[in-house]
Image (cartoon, rainbow, N blue to C red; front, side):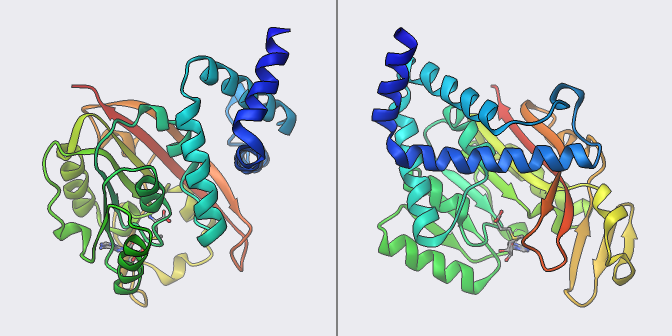
Length: 288
Ligand SMILES: C[S@@+](CC[C@H](N)C(=O)[O-])C[C@H]1O[C@@H](n2cnc3c(N)ncnc32)[C@H](O)[C@@H]1O
């Protein structure tokens, strides 16, 4: 009886909007698990047939526990921010950042190579002060205008992240999504060292990047010039590409406690040549 009451109350409080956002989350997970199963990269623990209902049921149970623990208010805030961005600008933040939102302390957020700002805007909408860093003039200008229009505490820095001074012990969260692979190893080490030093106590680092497995499936390997182990240069794009070995990414954050780490597969159906990406996702927290 108590459970049914909790369900009814949960739906009433979270509303259809919240269910909409969670449906997206369910679909994203389902897709990534099916693909992982196809390519043999699914872990043994997850090797049973994925089931949307199971995912929703688990999400619903999680909701009840959270509601009971009094964090529903925060849940409603992220749902609203998520739907606003998805609806207005079709910008969805990385799901892992939503799943671990409860661990992110109050404080400033830094988004490196932030692109269209899907993560930066999400955290600005949640009330964090955000430093957005991107080398693209167009993106940075757009971000500055959006921040002004929406009255957000977001500062757009139009610089190369290698030249951006990260203040020490400052950030509650530092995001490097789909950016670290664009540098040679020495630069990656410099950038991640600055990221480590830039974290405030209990602060988190989130990285999304690509693994060496991508190389095996690349249709464009012949266009790349090998520079060093797992690092290539594309002369047309004048861009480096580093592909991370298993375990290499967490080793760049030796003083952090690993909260989440995954070496997985994503089937990107949106791309013209619908391709598999072999992804690495890391979330670590500074404990002291
Ligand atoms: C693949 S996008 C990722 C965007 C965003 N982080 C995301 O996850 O959607 C890479 C972004 O990094 C930016 N970028 C590339 N090299 C950079 C550099 N050296 N310094 C700063 N930004 C850079 C590009 O302009 C682009 O917006």
